[in-house]
Image (cartoon, rainbow, N blue to C red; front, side, top):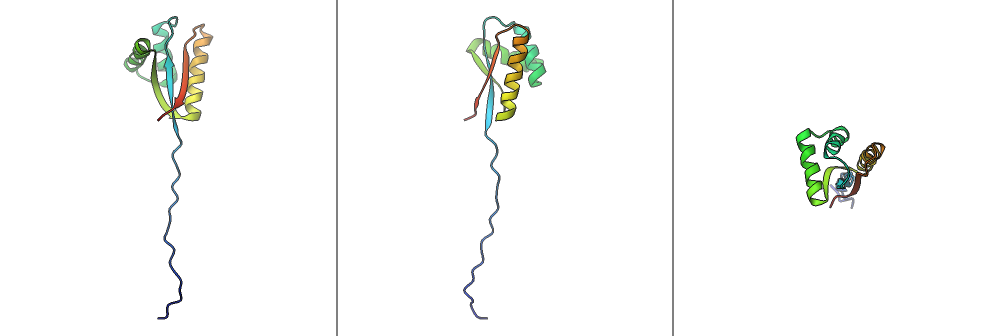
Length: 101
């Protein structure tokens, strides 16, 4: 068989990159009642009461605490909704987001 000079092309598979994740962070304040923070965490982030209490106490002692990690859009939406829920009740509680390292 004669060599025609053609080479076979190696097969390449395209992998889609996973979207970057963002952390939702609870920032402590001295005015929002602990029971309200736990209730909000359970309602918005669907965490069990025991875990919500641990998150709330960690934010209380350390100043802030990571609540959950989501894609950017979901993290921003949840942080905004949780902050607005607190504001509608008259509390200055704040949730922020930042990229996960």
